[in-house]
Length: 450
Image (cartoon, rainbow, N blue to C red):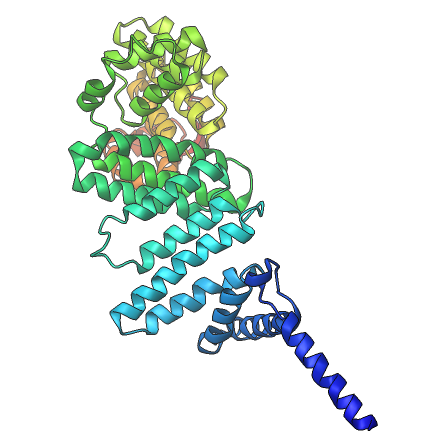
């Protein structure tokens, strides 16, 4: 009799547990209730263990069960999901089934946004970026040849996350934009320009964080700049056609003027009247480095060199990036060279090097100054030619900091060597080959007798 009571109680318990069992989806909880909650944890564990070992075949079944029954259980479901589903897509031969898995992959990202979209580092922008990357990787090209859907998701990710986005988000976004512009230059030009102006400030900001791993953003900024320059979208005449009619009406629009100045700068269109006008309007509203630079360029065009130097110095004081400061100092150096003031020209070039020791332009500029004004260092015509030793030293230094300038430097070196003083004349003056020598006069550089 006692045994029957125990068995009846056990049977009742099983029925009660079965009746209480609910999946996470049914109960609106992370794991569900009763037996279903236990199954969820078990399948989650099985999935994690298999996926960690790269055994995606064994991870498929428990992953599908967790995703179907308790999708809010743990973020690892979505961390391993792309790898598991990606593996399935790569293994599947049937086009219809492959498409079905792809659709599941895309909806998985929507579920992650629903259940885990509020995570600070891996929130909505992160999820959209990863979704777009997998879309580009796995979508059937025939269904979306331009990957426009991914482009839209990446745009949203950038709008939401800004500099917090992974570097590939900016890379993929601009690559897609570049491809669409190449396909339809006339129709997509304005959007392409907008996309460039959208990503570059963010890449610059993140790249200047001081964190070593963020140098990837600076490198990507350079890649994007090169792509944009090669695209041909930023021809001066085209930019004038877009912005000339808008300048007067938007002369008080600071954001618009900043955009125009930045675009004309990267496109090397700083001789345009549109650029000059934008710079003048911007300088009235808020003096900035770009605006001052524009006014300096206009002053050079008008041969008002004193005013040009004044504006370039203003630009330097307003600039925060040392690389850009270095370029501005070189602009001053070139103005002084036009004026024939070689000592101030060298001083400006040296200031450029203090901001950026890898500025090959500065070394080449100083070399050209030494070569052009060699006769000013001494009354002795033989000693005058020692200036070319110092000039060659600068060119060798330029090559070392920027190997891409080697051909240009080597050409000048070959030319300058023909002006080296004869060894017989040097011997008569007690100057021996290979010894240390200080070039006299304003140059004052210590070099090796060549």
